[in-house]
Length: 257
Ligand code: NAD
Image (tube, rainbow, N blue to C red; front, side, top):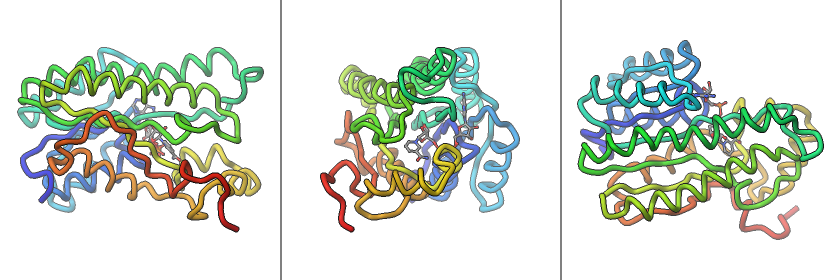
């Protein structure tokens, strides 16, 4: 198994990429801490793992709150004795997020608090835990919109993910000699609740798919497999990367008909 004897904490573990990663990491031998603001869905993920014979616990945590991030890391160490893998994955894409003219400041602030500050707070409390474990792997979920501009405006989201990418590079450099690797996962557009509720008409969905050479949305499970590689020792010489898992979106100038 690829994550045997590892302890992984995954934020946003109640849904989408986070849930699929919890399930996959547990199936590969990791003990998993499912962190989410939604305690019910986090508990459901935990149940699913245990039903498959895996090890899991869940904790209610809002990643924009320092006390919650401190508590989720403590929960991991108290329950499973250490922390090896921190997957800062929780994020929102607010339906009122738009262009500069129309995005309200409160939507900007909320998006930054969860998507960007949440990653900083995860690392603030997670890095000392990884040090105590002798090193480890941090994965931060960014997005393809951190690399290329989105056709459907979502300025706060885009800016927050650009910040995640910049932060990931610096974290990788700063902690490289401590055996702590830090990588960003850059998903393309996925068929998850988060994006489908934002692209809520067929026209908006098609507008987005025009840019994807593969001509389809990605699946959360496809992100989980990419995260598994970054979490495991197989990626032991990989740090500071922006791992694109986007159906070719950022490679394309013109997509095939
Ligand atoms: P999702 O909505 O299915 O899951 C997100 C989870 O995060 C939910 O369980 C939610 O309760 C939780 N969450 C929200 N705010 C939180 C907070 N403050 N603290 C803790 N948990 C919180 O979304 P997803 O598609 O799985 O997205 C996961 C990550 O992937 C996000 O960072 C998102 O920005 C990124 N992403 C998604 C897509 C896509 O197309 N879906 C594309 C690129 C990047």
